[in-house]
Amino acid sequence: MRGRPEMRTPPRQTHLFEEHRVARVDCDVLIMGNGIVGNLAAAWFARHMPALHVNVVGPAARTLPIVGESLVEFSTQLLQEIGLGRHLVEEQLPKYGLTFYYKVDPTAPADPRYVVDAVPTNPPLPAFLVNRFTLDEALRQLNRDNGVEHVDGKVVRVKLGSGARHRVTVRDADGRERTHTARWAIDATGRRRLLARQLHLGDRVPHQRSSFWFRLADFDPSILDRIDPVTSDARRPDAYYATHHFFGRGNWIWLIPVRAETGRQMMSVGLTCRPDLFPEPVTTIPEFLDRVAGEHPILGDLVRSGWVVDTNLYRNYMYRTRRRYSSQGWFIVGDAADTVDPLYSTGLALATMAIQQVGAIVRRDQAGSLTEGFVGRLDRAYAGFQELGEGQVARLYDVMRAGYQCRLRMHLHVIGFFHMALPLLLNGYHADAVGAAMMARLGGPAHGLGRQLTDFEPLIARAAARRPSPPVGAGVRVHSAFAMNHSWFEHCRDDEIPRSLSRMFRHMVALRLRLLWTAGVRSWLDPVQLGGLLRSAIWGVAIGALGRRSLKRSRLTRWLFASGRGDAHPGPASSDPMRAELTR
Ligand SMILES: Cc1cc2nc3c(=O)[nH]c(=O)nc-3n(C[C@H](O)[C@H](O)[C@H](O)COP(=O)(O)OP(=O)(O)OC[C@H]3O[C@@H](n4cnc5c(N)ncnc54)[C@H](O)[C@@H]3O)c2cc1C
Image (tube, rainbow, N blue to C red; front, top):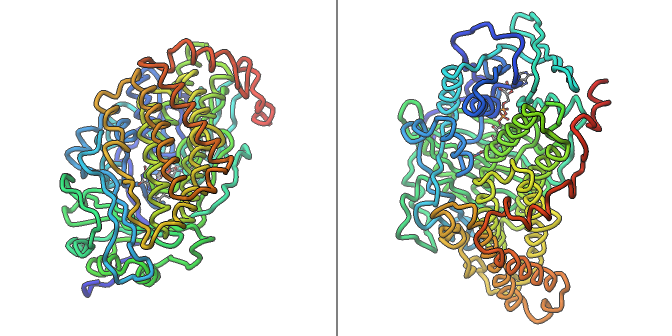
């Protein structure tokens, strides 16, 4: 590492709040946890419901690792909406999409040839690569300016009100306790998972993940030029300012350039693996260098050219929550609810979705029109998207070293994200009664898109087995103007969503036909594939026939998804089935 020793800093003691005003004991919204999601939620309320009094509780000195340097379009939109758009442009780095690197010959580590799949032009909407320390400080400053009050201390007890005000006891650094009351309580305590633990809402995930990451400074970025790309993109805005993803056996490595406070060269580097497929521990820099030597020696050279600022480790860190929102005025958001695999940088996008849903529930509650059905629909829309994304990414590890399969599956993920998920989210379907029910149906893991994607997996494997080696150069690009749905993003109109969805399903029909052709005659007799083909064709034609109209406002979708159909918790808000448990 250029003669400099690896520098291990002690746990960070960043002082989050310089001035400590004494916060009001009674407030409207009490946010437990002062990480990025708690502060984003506070900023959302300050922007959209300024009449509400919001308190954020959390320790002033931070010792936990901070992670999440890549924003996607949806999380960027939230930051712009609350007033941090200028900060992003002036203080952070632009993100020109994601770039995926697949080894042409994974059995020859020294071979510098990679199939490089990059965004071909400017992405349809802006996104950023963020230094979380400067972003988090700008967010806290924004909240201070907007009158959000900070309570310095840790929540030690929560008594949920079930109709009455919630009572939250906070212990400060000197051991003094004080009880605060609030009409709405939001748990954003991250991995502490205060409410999920108290209410026994934790759920297991089928596949674990571990992540080791560090910040690298003063490295030589020209080392990346040694990569011999099998594909090239003449119109790429800037190849460096992207998230870089290198695939290996049961693992992938990220490189994310960030702007350092001191103006020096800096990037975040991390390895995420599924431990059942990649059992070798990566917990230190020497272990990291040892593992990358076997797959991507160029990355080893890059790390050795700089010096390591700090290291962090999450082992077997995946979990999820069975329920996130209640009509009784409590909510669980961010890492306090679910963790994500960082492959597509969706952590803060999911948190954005949750914050906007909580806002919609609070609005209805305030207006006296909240029902269990509405809360249940929003919860299911979130759970469906979270499970769909998590399930797809978890299974991708099976084929990360098999370039052809990995590329094709990712191509389908990108198609689904830009043709369905992002258009629906940008138009607020997740926070609307009809829209949320539709999202749960279209996007859930067991039906709609989830089932389509899963059904593709054996077909892709069969097609891969019949391709000549090296099998990486599939005729499909993960990123292209079509896959990224540039035609919809020209105007981002709600009434263009049916066409976008129809294009997605029609593309799936065409892709499945191509794969069936490659996989051979026996695949045509597979009922799963024929069923998938038929379903995509029917969805494509049916949604396309709706023409130009808003799906959440169309009479047909309102009839299909409104009036309690599929509500898990029908009836008025007061009949919450968890009530007894909460008041124990
Ligand atoms: C390896 C990895 C990489 C990731 N990369 C990305 C990415 O590129 N892009 C992206 O969008 N997302 C990414 N994510 C997800 C993202 O990091 C998380 O979604 C986000 O950081 C969660 O923030 P949070 O505020 O919920 O939790 P935290 O940041 O953990 O904050 C929780 C806060 O609660 C406080 N707290 C804890 N207990 C109490 C208590 N009893 N009382 C009061 N306060 C308490 C803590 O002090 C802390 O400040 C990544 C995640 C991982 C694991």
